[in-house]
Image (tube, rainbow, N blue to C red):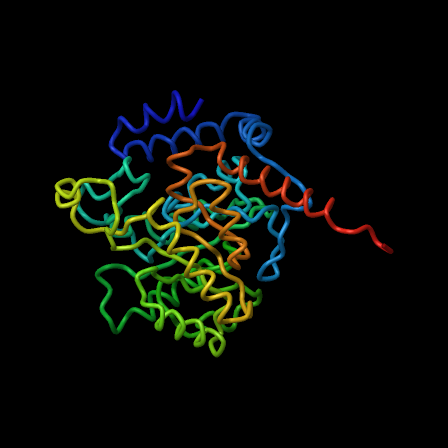
Length: 334
């Protein structure tokens, strides 16, 4: 239904309006008695072979929703009901900010991609806390945090410290786009802190970051962010020139994202977990990412193009693979 009916309607809208419409509808479904239960019955898949223990957390499945979709934590309960094993909200900043002028997000249908230069628009730390305060304990929520655009360099550390201290009791892990010291010391409960890296880093620098992680208090890597590269796109140059700058996500990023994860995993010898994200458009891409060394994966652009059935399709494929591996393994004692 999504691909034949709903997607054409959403893709006829401006992408930000379409996104706002989807979040509004999800929230409305969540307010209807039994609404989330209906979503779970249709979309959620549970099976022991899907479960993962990473960072000391038990994930019902390894498929998460990347930061940027639910910036303010307004629909994470409904998104979990749609089958995600975890949801990463944000990027959240200390103060609300409007982001860059519109238009600032663009679809590239010929490439199954999106270009985004939103400027981290969000409603700020305290609006996010208001949403997260009544979360269900079984949901695993990540918090992608950042500094405000107007924050002076001397106050950047203070921005991050404020985010850590105030969100600590409401999220299960943090991801950040820049390395920092272990500024969450002193909290009563452990919260993993992950570094998110760019696919545009040259391989020697990726190796350097991989090695550096072993000597830092950070707990893992999210690989990768969007790319500024426009190499090999089907979209015509005139359209790209009109769009201008921004990070590109989606199918053109698949190969590079998997390469980066494989490189990090091999060099680190699996010393720390990796969340693989970037260009995961179908079950085949997800299986390749997991095979490259990712402990968990996240969807974003693939979910927009393929719709809510994508998580279920991936989970079913992973269950089938686990069953095939089990049947191929020799029975105990043989």
